[in-house]
Amino acid sequence: MMSQHETVLISWADAHAGDGHWATLEEQDSGEHIVTTCGFIIPEQDGGKAGHVTIAQSHSPDDFYDHIIYIPQGMVRSITFLRAFTKDLPA
Image 1 (cartoon, rainbow, N blue to C red):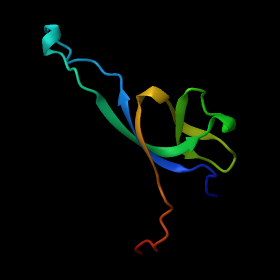
Image 2 (spheres, helix red, strand yellow):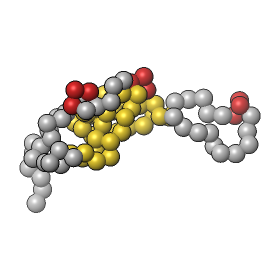
Image 3 (spheres, one colour):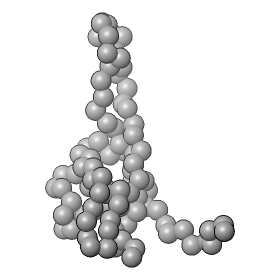
């Protein structure tokens, strides 16, 4: 069974820590830590969290989800909707 949810590739700014040693504030990382996640996007009306982009890695025929991540909308940098792969797989 195919999931009824759209498959997406999402880039987002994750919270992250510095290098883990004594340093001055000037030495600390000041840039964004961009993470890329791929999965099924779960809209709020289907149980996604308000104010977030909800992504699930897996979806089963009995409507269970696995590895769900809730990304605050303000941290999202891009969302690319993916198309189904329709070529024959090699034998």
